[in-house]
Image 1: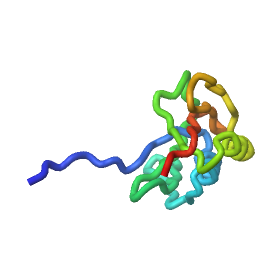
Image 2 (image 1 turned 90 degrees about the horizontal axis):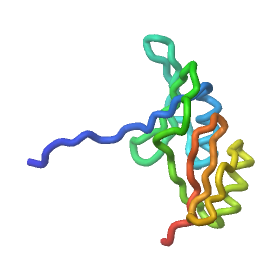
Image 3 (image 1 turned 120 degrees about the horizontal axis):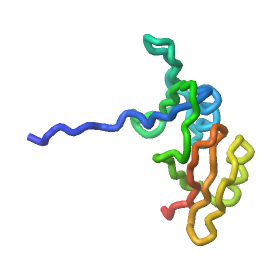
Amino acid sequence: MTPRRAQPIAVAVDARDPEVLAWFWCGVLGSSVVRRWHDAHGTAYVEVGLVGDVVLLFQAVAAPTAGKNRLHLDVAAPGDQRAEVERLVGLGARVLDEAPDHPWIVLADPEGNEFCVLPARAS
């Protein structure tokens, strides 16, 4: 019998405004909100579909995260990397580092969470 292992179900992201970040990431990923809910303490959560049953879970927090986020998403451009960066900036991202010695470009989402845009992947 194969031993059971923990399975990822969500990538949780602290957010001052979960709705705004969910909207942004839906635009980035071409995804949609799959669920909204509040916990017993009234904290708001918004889930955006990723792959299979895994979601991006935006959870409301009062205080911003201090310093650099320790976990970030990498996304592959669907075609031209620069054109994708321009599209994401149009959605509300900011370019943080062009990283000329690396294949990625570092951006920040509307709340300052960093993520990287890589060139399109070969089929």
